[in-house]
Structures are given as C-alpha cells and as structure tokens.
Length: 93
Image: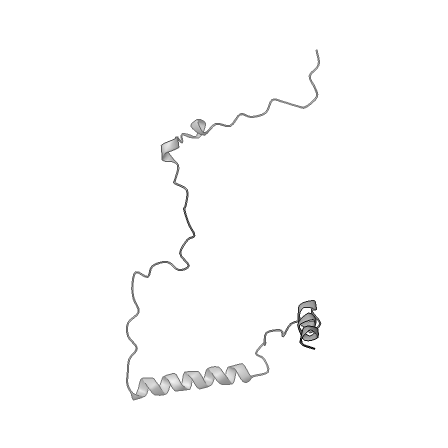
C-alpha cells in the first residue's frame, strides 16, 4: 500500500531528551523589569574649586556653540496638516 505522500515521519520532541526536568527550568517573571539596574559603584563627588568651575563653564559654552553650528541636525518639526491638529484648531473656533 502506498502512503499519503507526505514524506517521512515527523520528529518527536521531548524535554527529557535534552536532559531538562520541570525543576530545572527557571521561574516565570512576575511584574516588569526595573528600568535601570542597581549601581554597584557610586560616582565620586565633583571637585569644587575655581579651576573646575571654569572648566565646567567652558564645557557648557562649547556645547552651546556646537548646537548653534549649521552642521548640527535639528529634529524634524513634524507634519503640519495632521487631522488631530486640524481638528483642535476647528474646535476652538
């Protein structure tokens, strides 16, 4: 007699063949994961003094100048004709 033409028999999969038991599986997680992991080493305090304050001010000034350069890519403002914004404008009238 001929078979049904579906090829060879399917492979049977069992967890015991892998050597795992019910007790060895990890527990399911209940609740969301924390946003950030716990910090093992806390950062040291900032140095205080005129030199450090001057360097921080220079760094802030340089950061501001870099933002004003034409090479800085600014975020896109978005579409102006969205339905929700148009609806809000019409509802105020």
